[in-house]
Amino acid sequence: MCGIIGFSGSTDAKNIILDGLKRLEYRGYDSAGIALQNGNVINMVKTSGKVDNLVAMADADTKLAGNCGIGHTRWATHGVPSDVNAHPHMSADGKFAIVHNGIIENHAEIKNKLIQKGVKFLSETDTEVIVQLLDYYYDGDIKKTLVKTTSMLEGSYALGVLCVDNPGTIYAAKVSSPLIIGIGAGENYFASDITAFISHTKNVIDLEDGEFAEISADKITIFDHNFKEIKKEERKITWDVAAAEKSGYEHFMLKEIMEQPAALKATIEPRIKDNKVNFDELNIDIKKYDRILMTACGSAYYAGCVGRDVIEKLCRIHVHTEVASELRYRDPMIDEKTLVIVISQSGETADTIAAIKEAKNKGADVMAIVNVVGSAIAKLADFTIYTWAGPEIAVATTKGYTTQVIVLYMFAVWAAYKLGRIDEKQLLELTKDIKRLPERAQRTLDLNTKVKKLADKYHEKQSIFFIGRYLDYAVCLEGSLKLKEISYIHSEAYAAGELKHGTIALIEEGRLVVAVCCYEPLLDKIISNVQQVKARGAQVLALAVEGNKKIFTEADDVLLVPKANELFMAAVEIIPLQLFAYYVAKNNKCDIDKPKNLAKSVTVE
Ligand code: AGP
Image (tube, rainbow, N blue to C red; front, side, top):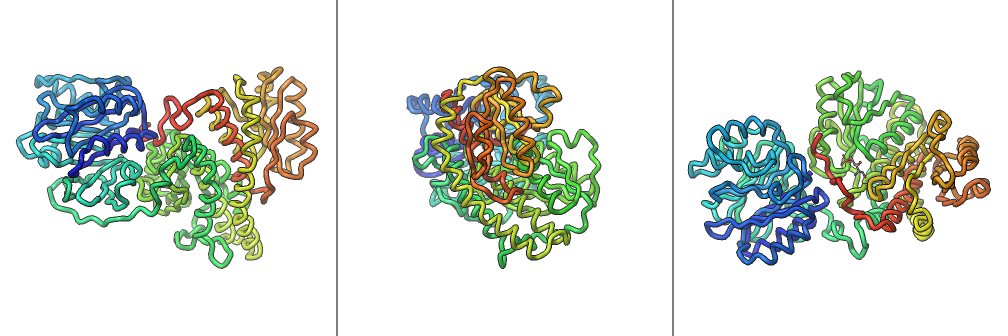
């Protein structure tokens, strides 16, 4: 959940690292730090708070100079956010400085052993054991010491190391946490993710688990634990630096909401051949499975709930959904006839990775729907479908979610055809309906000004309910999560028919209920739920499909979205809910792109 960066070149490393940390800040933002090597000295500045605090301190520190260094932005796991717990961590003799993303599970055991040998610890972090081990084992050979140290560690790490005896060189190692190496001209980088150095280079090497890197300004050597050099393929990042910048928008979230039509198009088009959805390249024998288990976390899970309903409807195969953080504790009924579909924007989510391992142990095939190319989840799965959303920086996912939903629609249609549940004519028609969705999403964005006004009206509400039925209910789950995570307003999503079984007790004068009424076959049902809450004093903001006149007599406010195939409305109707959450949060002066207590990639359990 933290972001790390390393740089070696011939220019001053300070600004490059600080700029990289700002770009990585979405990964964690409770403290930050930087260490630069200047000849045989390592100087370090670190502080609690956001990267801007660090920038101010680093700018004022004249000793902080050098062409080589490491940086870190933290999401606290072990030890409160504080100056002393911030990374880098340095050995007492000043010989080593390290940054770490991950969790060292056996840190307590290592710490106890080192304390018995007289080593003094300063912080409460799990990370500090790494730097103390390096110092303890060091015999003048950093590579040997690094291999020995990491062999003692259990858990996950992406590690960056400076050693005073090796000026101009940064070292990296990784197990189960992301680390990518950037190849520049006369300068090289490592980072948790490409956004950190995309403005400098698009040429990268993916470091794999168990590999080590020795990086100087003009040389990168990758080696294994036997010090055997490993030849690595270079890869070129296809997206542009602007994709990871705000480009005039006040927040990444708004930019990413607006990018959805393009992201949907980019995700749909490569999967259409002869006007038909086509996933043949996956080489999945879909007839082999008698059930599908969909698992993911947060918004990705809610995308899975939409996918469950559409796959079941079109394919007539049983689909079960389960949050990935629970899956492994249930001894789930999974076998080789189960296709497990995992969904993840980042491709790094620890709970989702654990669910994949559980599924594989039980003999299932795993298909991953992932946005980040080459991520851990993409590599672990048997089949991978990428959502071509481009980089998503705001912690609250928007285009990540809608592209996941689109992939699930396409997979449902393709699988239904392969299973003989729909004929070629239906395949062509459903493909056409999917191809229309980017345009529908674009028209939905025209609601921007209207949604903003509604957010002005309702932003002071203490609690907001979202109700819907069937597919609309799945969208309510996501709409409610969006509002909670960025505006901190209490919110619940309910299957509208469930209200009368308890929750309606919470409906009182002035309570805002957002009623999603887009699945038209159930319109009368949801309208009767709207009447029930109105009768108890609620204010109702309804979301309905263009052409729906009835809703105006029932709701206080109405947002009409363009009509699409009723099975595929989620990708459209979520957009006003994203905008609503955004403008409510903006009215309430929340830190929209970096909501409190959250981080973009959740790499801890
Ligand atoms: C979404 O807005 C959240 N920040 C969060 O629920 C997220 O969707 C979840 O943590 C899963 O992340 P992933 O898609 O990267 O696996």
